[in-house]
Image (cartoon, rainbow, N blue to C red; front, side, top):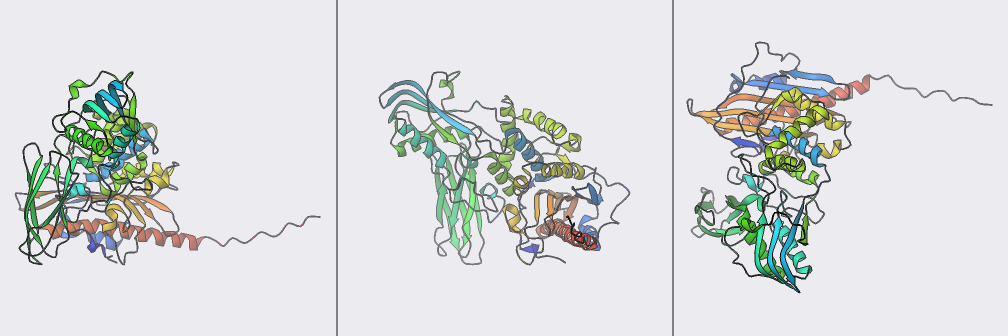
Length: 547
């Protein structure tokens, strides 16, 4: 019953991927192999040569009565990849609340004389993931199946149409509306909300366009330079393209290099004439200096003059100890956190997942992002009723060798959400197979489970130098299966320690894990239909005759 999942992404990695040479391998499998209750279709997948030394795990539960439908090593640790984000975002959703909005204020420091401020404007960064750069007219947050943050690793990444500087433009308009037209002084970004933690990608209190520059090359005619567009265009960043268009069917291979400070970017290479526009990114190395200049430029567009030079370092040393007595002249409000959760889970947004730890810590009064972990720990024990020792974590995205999950732990966490008022909101924040986020890349046609699997994938892949082959350390998938009658099952399926001679073998592993989820969903539909048919017919009771 193989569905047409092979229309999925053909690139280095499925979103939620960790691309690294991983030191550890999957734990050795117990001697007993409990595959007896699985269908022949599933066991045939698990018995493929690619999994000779691998460890499979699977757990499916009916949360209505706690019945275990399938179980295979439910209490064993597995390397998860980005399924760790289920834990991180669950903790953030509970700690912050789904309706939480980040408010980024701008204070006027100095003396106001009519329309002139003699002093500085201070934007007090609040850990807002998008600063309006993805907000659609209806207030929701936009995303594409392959996010721009993956553009250097995954061909086919695309941009959303929104302006990444929209939030700063709104702030600038508010400053102008407050009556200020001249700042005889400077603009300062206050980044003291939290200390950026030593994890990758590193979250910062101010984030504009995910702290990257987007670089889009579009082919022209063979032999001619490719067309370049880039954003956000902020001084002193400059981009030069040496990319040439080659014949249709030729090689598309674009490299990006940058000066040590990241402000001078060069693209080189080739793009085929019949290629779609190719997206690359380059990191913003100093988000505070970048944000300062971007805000000065936004103020200029709004009709506010700043006398300080627009480029240069962020003068953080001029910030006051507090803003008591300094009036607020602007404030930007983010979308509700449920929109950020949907973004993070749907595109496997690594920066957003790591930032969630900082958001949690700040909410508890700490500037140390790792103080978010005790909050998640307490949420698991005290609210979700999940034993936290079923997980091991050292970041928010699932990128470090420490990270581990058990199938039982994730199923318990998923079942918790079904008991809450946010059950539907959380479930629909996950990628939906064949419909949304990374799920939209798979199960696109002739797929019976389309729209019926709500789940977060995770991948860890590296290169085995000893055997000169790919080491697929983890391919996992966890979430909800929806039967035709709307009944939900929780599930985890994953494999650690697979191997493949080349990239096609890696794609096959991804297909296999997805195919098992499709089989489980179809089995759930059949079981629900059978149980319904087996129920005795309920006859209407005889009318009660009353005098």
